[in-house]
Length: 446
View 1 (spheres, rainbow, N blue to C red):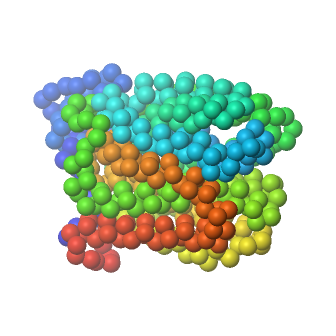
View 2: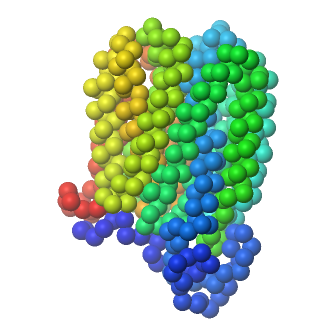
């Protein structure tokens, strides 16, 4: 199968929309879009604006939502290290790791319910409800002092509310972009890196000069502003999709989807394990707490470049091709730089942005690869179904890593994560092969 695999899975649909440069032929029926406007409808054919004022405002809204959610999750390693040194000093790294793990797990797992809700009702009320609960959870987090406080507020409440936000912010991109979806998703995902740079710097200053309570209140205020902007900018476009349930297990009959989901699960095990444990790893290597704050910000700075780079490149060379290249990059960086870090702080600083570049590329490309396998108005369901499995990998990554780090040492810890990256790369090679109907060709855009 030599055809371009990025040629839309959603070209069977066309719709007219006021901001689209291409107006589809007038269909026979009308529908109400997610925002209440009456638009001509034909479910056989949809065109995509691929840009324009309205489309880029949506991307900016998604950027802000992801900055406030995934951006803060990218700083979770700082929470882990701070709790272990202060409020939860009597607990092990593994025990504290379950708090962050539950947060990430619910964020991804609940996509299996929220994706179809997005397909059916659009983004408006999902984003509004998620924003209110998420900001409230951060205000309550400032008052937490006991283990069960942190688990209930940060693990459960924050994880659940952020699931509404992240799933919707990613899924809405598919309403406005098809050919340029990789670039658009990459730009939206840069929000995670911007938050991952900004929040550690904010936390470093506020924790040093104020205290935990006021540090988190400052973070909550920043997040509130980001949520307001996101609510004002995000809008749906495609008509509601009434059929389909929360989980479509038939997705796994497609080997492309199955291999991709396995590859994403393996990689996210490594990514969230690294984000959650890098500061702890640094302290075990004898580095200062200042280095722990810096390393997360630097890693996310590299991640921002990776997200921007991969989105642009993927639209030109193919989404799966880009995923494979960046996975190979991350694998090389892990074994060539992270493995021999030891007590060499300079090497640790070199490793962080390069690993961030690869991981940022991969995490922004994963939803785009999944979206390539379905129609645009089915994306929420496909994303939710895939990430319901991926969520279990993120649930165990920090506790497992937290147990391995003191048990097998830093070298064994890094080699274990490197092995997971090898398996992830193999899974995406299989997914690409399946996209080509098991006829391998090197120079095909997939």
